[in-house]
Image 1: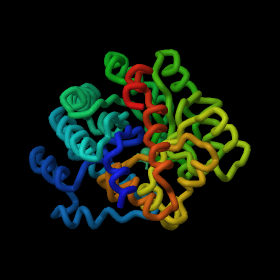
Image 2: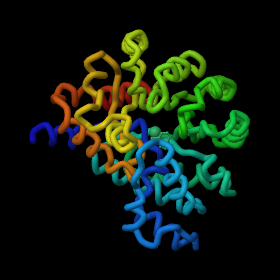
Image 3: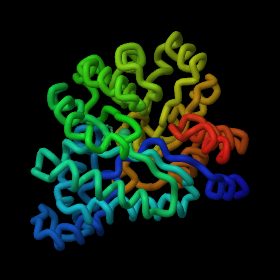
Length: 322
Ligand code: ES4
Ligand code: ZN
């Protein structure tokens, strides 16, 4: 009970949240109505029932369908503001928010509509928030390069870039050129790796893309040399416990390797990934992991500290939180 209160109340940063994955069925229906978009589901309940997936691809199919109701700047604003308010309730003090512009520009929504809506909510919201633009790895590198060109007028609204969507078959090296361009632009770099993909993808994300953090990365423990390197270099892993269970990366939470990652000296953090789809926001992720694993108050403090240390906040802002 004491530990639950600590987990809920401790200040924390969220470093792995796809804003489109925070879209709750209720808001999807509200936006569909507002925009005259026809949904394949007739009620909030039937949509929520469709949130049954057993791997990354079956989840992504539903996630992209949900995002189809986002058309106007106000829609992106409302989605982002709902997330920021919910995160604040969990004592999240700072969030580094992923967004997927290609999911929207491919449907004819202007890049500006997407960024302006999300960014304006970050200005108005109750917590500190910054934006990381993700490239969809199932699309081509040329598509990612074109998206980067579109983002250049909004360079000051974006602190970094990431790589998400279907991992297996789309290794990091597919995006060498676009990540090198982003590095030259002074953007922070992250990538999803080692979720469904092999530990080798973690290594190539580090060596060929020069990323500063690994999103997920839980499969690193399959490679002892890689594990030792991640510990030595203190490369942060943004771990998402409920996501890993829903997408069957682990059989159940008792089999999750979060404690093993911390025991190996890795800079692991806890995050919600796609909270509307995976059954919970930040505190639900902390509570589920701590309920199932012999994690202690010391681990809780370590995870909270790691989240600020691994953030892209300026050093002074970081120190204020730690
Ligand atoms: C994602 Cl869990 C996950 N993995 C890869 N790409 C994603 N986009 C949204 N959620
Ligand atoms: Zn993710």
